[in-house]
Image (cartoon, rainbow, N blue to C red):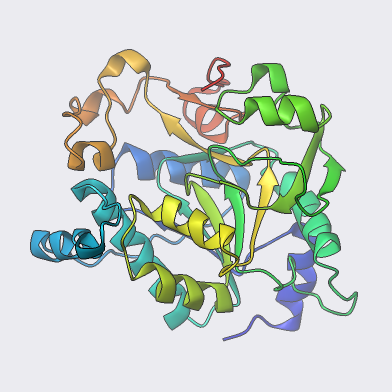
Length: 311
């Protein structure tokens, strides 16, 4: 059901999606931290139950494109890919106009509502939304990439919409491979809405109703190394209209480096085994590029920004 007029009025002023959804396969320290951060921030996430996918199903999906030399996902990446498709089907079945999808280890700044209000204003301006269209972000896009681990800023790209946001991480303190592009192309204290160029990691992304349908249709074909890589490829080919907020507003929280943590995707991809998760619950980890972490404030009453790096 489409949102009513009262929802629209409040949504446009606050920069709201119609539904906030978290991708998770089971309750854990990840979901408990997500819920604590959401409660602190005044956000409400729905965590739909994931369907059980057999190993045979995952292996069949992995093999799509093998006869034509396509890059194929490892097992854990293929399983995560199918989970994203399943949640996008939930968006479609729920007839949502817009939804924000986050992974369950995601983190954000305690000032997220003010940040999203700025994003709403500037996405609407970037996409030339009519004043009488009260959709918080407009709908002239398929993917609104808010949580990622980097996106290029390149010569010849469509002019971005640059806006002031003093809550963003300073470039010298930024950690990630795209740091050089921020340093060379974006003033301190500013973010920008831009077209997607080599954006990777799906920590948090918005979809429109139309976008969800297009993504499911395109990405059900598999034949790439991971969901985010395939999504970025279709953005590059302009089969999807993808906008990015750069630098990101959402990033993944990680337990301490010495805790032996390895993500479920990496475990599934055969990159090793993770430590007992019981130790992750009470030990403060880090989140890259988030100045005032909602997770760490909720759980530890502290900040926890990852040390700066170029990778």
